[in-house]
Image 1: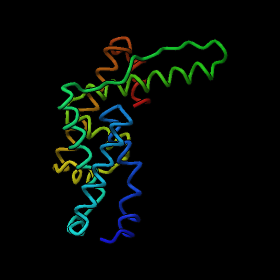
Image 2 (image 1 turned 90 degrees about the horizontal axis):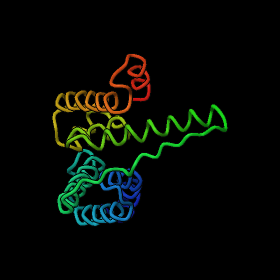
Image 3 (image 1 turned 180 degrees about the vertical axis):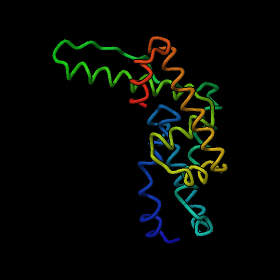
Image 4 (image 1 turned 90 degrees about the vertical axis):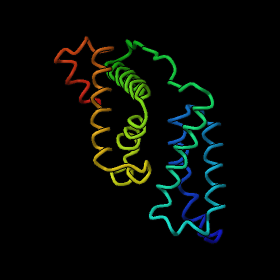
Length: 181
């Protein structure tokens, strides 16, 4: 692969790789370092990249693996900071936006509590919009396994939210959470 082809095909993956790494590490500087390492590795592999069906899937898998290695070195899995609940008396629109922001933060925190690979599968499918086949390539897993893991992950997140934040599963709140998720 020439330098020009590398620029055209590999460098545009920067935003996806950076966002993916940052979801794991919750640190933009560490995420940038990971992406830089990926680019170096891909550049060193440039003569063999045509052997892969999807260089993007390869890059995502490499990013995931490097992030997990970095997390293992730290011995802790970072979670988002405290949820800040704000009450706004200015208008109903602002109050609804605040409620939505809180619900999103709570959902992110619930996703962060999932074990691997459920967390990664849910991030790739529900947050980044990858299809099942792409996720299968990235994670080197069977599509049916991914579907089952995603279903279980969604169920765990829903149960966590219902039990912790939404009145232990009242019917009114269950439907509200389903709309958010």
